[in-house]
Image 1: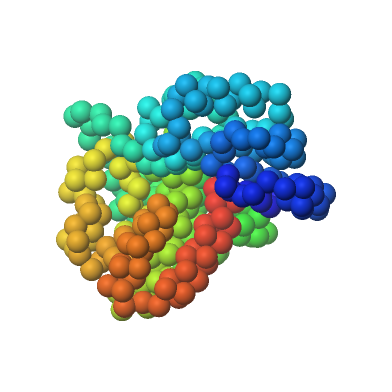
Image 2: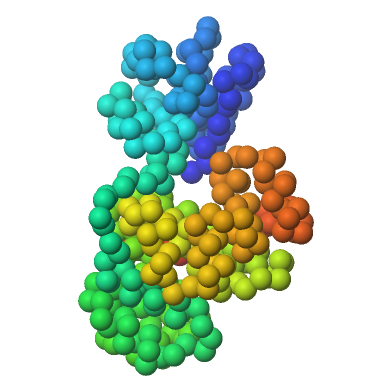
Length: 320
């Protein structure tokens, strides 16, 4: 499905309406972005599938009036730029059925909470998986201590993703059957899915994009791809485990500079992640500044980002 977004300030005309009607006939979905009511918009509303309302610039009473006028139309209501849990709850209460924004990344603190032992062991496995060659006895022993992770991993190994003809029933057999590289991929997927248990799936998607991008772009900057992969993957750990990063990094089996990068320090190890976060927020000026610090070509960075998005989508198709 391809969604065509029309910005609010486009000039309304019969030609525009006819063009939208033609695209709809070809299977496109139509979204009206930054929606504000204005004369003549009814013609597009009859064709639209989505109406996107900017939560950051509209007031509650204005949104209520807008939604009332939209009620006769068969459109899905999208609240965009929802940045906090409070705004998310407000959007749901107002009747929005789709939400866009980073509300799910905002940390809700739970005082006195510590990292569960099974989560620490999963992070330890992640670190072990990035070593080459894999230490089969060590990794197998760590995985077998976690029954839920073992089940998820064996389910993935026996899925069409790996296309193994004979059922695999042990971690050791799984590693031997699929090889180091495939085992790393599915084990990382299983662990990240476990870490994100009970949280929005969008978190997992962003974490995988960050991990893969940092890994792919690391070679362009002369830094360690393995560490960069973990940095990207673990950058959303606070939102997954609902704990501050500084409470988490003390327990992570990582080099000190990577811990500092996770905590937001201005270190060279964090620059690729910073560039991607600026990209996620659409902060193009900071993207340009950061890419110069990385001494990397902007087009090369965008190519790696596109590859990372494709990779994450492919991997996550097998997550559930």
